[in-house]
Image (cartoon, rainbow, N blue to C red):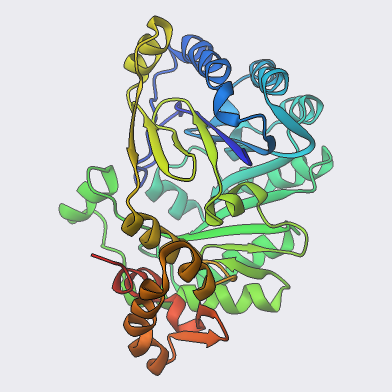
Length: 375
């Protein structure tokens, strides 16, 4: 069982663009943590006694949880699962939560990687997205984390924000490089349905994302990351040597993982399972012993589509031999047939048995993958 994901479904306030499962009410924090601890001990048989290489606290905002509670959860994991001594243990955090005392305690309890949701170093961007922290806190928290002994730090940055010009985006990137963090995840702002941002765009309060400008900023991102020694190992992720995210890389390799908490997903190689995305119902069903999840067995077509989509997003690319081994020669030939126009245009490149996206093709990653799907 390469990875365990723990979803902390609480935030101080709702970011305007976010459609993840969370609650801004923290009344249920303790009962929720107890329910999640019960889920941890109740799913031991799924690990098949395999070693756990990574633990990832995501959310929501895991940095809202007191370190003693995080330590309690990590203790349960180590007692019940074969967590490797050198396991990568990541905590997602907001800049405003990372004071010196909190950072020291995180280090003491065994958190060894921080994923900090900075998003932007510009105050106007943070205000538009309804982030809690300020630009000053974004800068200071990274320096405090480094002073506390955290060397493995990743930060999130968003491009394509309305009002963010290319010069502003370049300045954001230069600020990030100046912090000397070894990993950066960067995403284009997406207007998800039923979010505050979607409402603002629909009512004209906020301009829609300028797709052409966003594409230019993605090109700038790729160029500047390369010039600063970051490997572009997944479409939205860049790392210095030795600092690839082990947890997320296991997802992108199609490996098994367990998801703990409301709305968390799990995958055992054939079945996908997802917990109820309702805090009260999840906690109540856990405590009463009722079923708190749904699941589906993936069809061969679904597994093929997932492999194509995920592999093309990575620098490893899509392995034709793997396609033939897992799905048959007919599916390999089908893939090559559907890929032919993109190979001709140069959006896809073939190196022996590997298909990879070119720099231009990375701008069309989702479209290309969907065109290669079995429908």
